[in-house]
Image (cartoon, rainbow, N blue to C red; front, side):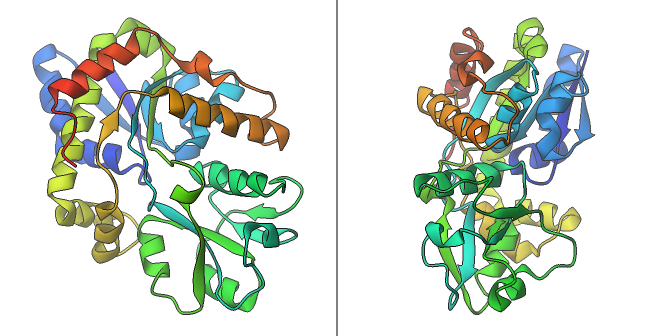
Amino acid sequence: MTVTIGVHGSNPSLYLLARLGILERTLEPLGERVEWVPVEGTRVGELLGDGTIDFGGTGSTPPIVGQAQGHDLVYVAVSEPRPEHGALLVADEGPVRTPADLRGGTVVLSIGSWQTHFVAKALNDVGLSYRDDITPVRPAAGQDQAARLRSGEIAGWVAQGPELAAARREPGLRVLHRVGEVITDRSVFFASRAFVTEHPELVAVVVAALREADEWAAANVAEAARLHAAELPGSAADWAEALGVLPWRLEPVPASFIAEQQEAADIFALNGFIERPVVVADAQAEALTPLVAGVLARAGGGSR
């Protein structure tokens, strides 16, 4: 069969796996092949649900949204926490000193990505509502978010990866929250239940290949940065800084992650970001955890 995997620039592990040939070499002796499908990260749950792809990877928000849309998804594996992956930035001399000061302001973020979880949780922690107390907006091409912060046009801006590396050099900005101060911000790998149920051996092969790609990236950050900068916004130097703080280590899905996802799902439902409450634990397959744990143990459990 052909394994279809959604790939996008915001998931470094899958982005690199799609370019290193690791999975192709592993599948060929099995008589299988892989098709890499370019996707928007925020649509991965939907695309798994309608059969466009078998496997994908995003941050914490898309699998919750996919479940709320009624798609039968299964969590496969997660990265270790990524505490330096992103941050909520504000104007250094502006009025926002705490998350509570965001009330009534505009916050620029990638709506539907892990950034929604980050901002909604930060607001919820101080008694504010993502729906009622801020205006979340997506960044538009060509906008200078740093200048907009300094001018007071926007109250906050969530930056990640090379964008955050570049923003740290901007004058007049301050980090209000690192992502790790609010959520664990794991990279999340999930699949359609049909794929997991019918082809567990291929799930194992994909996980092992992801582990190998991560090990390569951890040992070759400069080259990984060049591969990203060749096709995506951001300089190789900024990509190297961004990729250098990632853990490059996979884990079976822990109970603590399911609990964090349930908290996020409850906050999303309360704020109307998803149309109905979900039980995150339903997106699990009982036999999958020992399978993934075994694969990762054989792979050495990671390199850093």
